[in-house]
Amino acid sequence: MIEDVKPAEEFEKNTNKERRKQMKKKIFLALLITLIVMAVYAGGGKEAEPTGEGEGTLTFALITKALNNPFWERMGNGARELCEERGWNFLYLAPTKAMNLEEQNRLMDDLIAKKVDGIVLAPVDSAGVVPAIERATQAGIPVAVSATGVYGGDIVTYTGTDNYEGMKLVVEHMVEVLGGKGRVIVLDGLLAATVGQDRRKGVDDVLAKYPAIEIVARQDAMMQRASGMQVMENLIQAVAEFDAVIAANDEEALGAIEALDAAGMLDRVMVSGFDGNRDALTAVRDGRMVVTLIQQPEKMAADAILAIIDHMNGKEVPKRLPTEMILASKRNIDQFKDKIDG
Image (tube, rainbow, N blue to C red):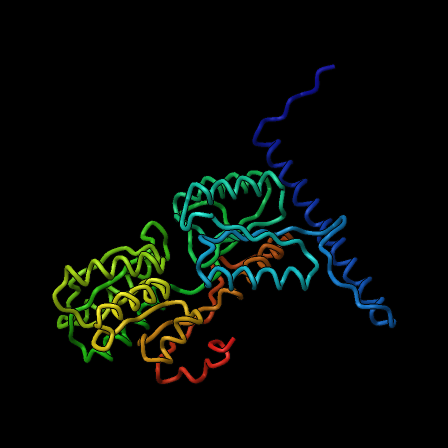
């Protein structure tokens, strides 16, 4: 007897429905295990350490852009801490070559093959990762993006800073310190990603209001410290005079500071960053950087995983989950002593 063959669309729909059912079963089992552990502990038994093993345990993965930036390390720590608290498995991955789209897409395919329960992705390229996101969705694996948005794909949500508004805050502070006039170098970063484009637009929209401030040079330093230093060294030779450097992130800014210091120019050129990493906050405290914007990468990653859980449970999830941001300058740097001392 030959069975009727269902159309591919209907088959995929039923398959995804079955996967969601299995995911909900995993969540129920994981919660049940947690309740049993709590009951044992309340009754005087030994507190159990979450092992992340056994039937019903969920597995989440985070893919960032690089291994050499403390921002991504902090994001990994936030996701790991949440998963350890809940007894879930956690995988943290990043391209071995920083900002490599091809490798990031391979990591996505590896996770699809492993059949993880959810993926949090910080995209290197906002368009280039879309096919990989679509492959994950077709496999029934929900994807949330964090720190950087995407130009397509059925994502659960975006978690992170409003990069446009954040950069406007940074640049307005620099304009104030410059007295509304001066010659500025701009170090852009990752213009293939929304984060780079949003921060660039933030710079341009603010400086457009101040005709006495001139952008004398700009170049993409790829949000890397080594690139920031190299680009700055070249621009020091090419540009006769300038008063400030506005960088797309802290790593670029710190690289630029090294180059300016080596050239004996740091005492007369002001530098801004963006991220609020420990080295940048230390530089602000020591007077080597004027301002940075503190983000919350730990919360970004944790919020993304929790949003995936809500999605798996059939709850409506907002398309954007913003995290708080705050300027750090010499005016308030003492408030962040704990972040510097770590």
